[in-house]
Image (cartoon, rainbow, N blue to C red; front, side):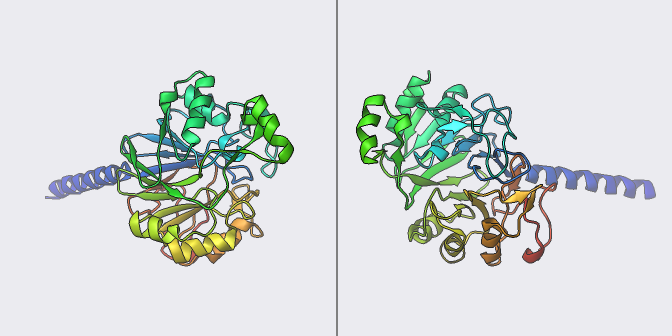
Length: 339
C-alpha cells in the first residue's frame, strides 16, 4: 500500500511539474536591450518580444544595439519603429555593451544615412511594419543597406498585420516626426538645414501587440496624454500591459504618464520606458529618479523596471511569472521593482 501511494505521489508531482512547465511555455518574453546590462540607462529604448510560438519582434532599435551582429539579438522576425527621431531610428550606436556610463553611454559608431534600424532589418532578414510615410522612407534605407524594399510593409491606423502568432496594430501619439538632416540626401539636407527644418514622414505611432496567449501590450511611443489612450487603447483593444514613455520634455513626464496609466489606460501591469536617465545603480532603482517618482504615483498596479538583459515573462493576463526575477507577494507596496 505504501509503495502504491509513493507511486501515486510521484505521478502527481510529475504531472504538476508538466502542467507548470506547459503553462510557463505559454508566456510572452520581453527583454530590454540597453547600453549596460543589469541597468536601466539614459538611452535605453530597444525591447525584444517573443511570442509563445517563437515569433520575435524588436521595438525601437535606437542606439543601444550594436548592429545586426549584437550577440543579444538572435533571430529577429519583425522590426517596429515608433518614429523617425535619431534616438529611435538609430543615428549612431554602441560598438559593444558597457561602453561609457549608464548616464552617458558611448555611442561612437555612426549609422547615418541608413540608420541602425535599416542595418538590422537587412542583417537579420527581418520584416518591418511602419505607419505614415515612414515605410516608404525605410524602404529606401533598407534598399541602400543591401536589402529588399519588400521587407518593409505599411500599417496605418485602424489596420492590422499578423506575424506568426502576433497581431500588430498601430495607434496615434501626440509627438512630432521630423527626419534629421544626416538621414537625407545631401542636397535636400542642405536646403532644409539653414531654416532649422526637418523632412516629414507622416505621423509617428504607438503599437498594440496581441500575442497568441491573449496578452495585449500597448507601446506608447513618444506620446503625451491623449484621449485615444482611453478610447482606443483601453476600450477597443483592452491593453493589459502598458509600456509607456515617461521621461518628460520629449514625452509625457512621470506625473503625466502616471495619469495616463491610472485614469485612461488602466492596465494590469506597467513598464516605464524612455526615461532619459540612469534610473538604476547596480540594478537597484535610484530613489531620487524620475522612474521612482513614476512608480510611486501608480495606484495598485505592479510596475516592472526594464533592466537590460533581464527577460520578463508574462501570461495572457499580464501577470509576470518569471520565477527568477518576479516577486510573488500579493502586496503591491512590497513588490520588487524589477521583474
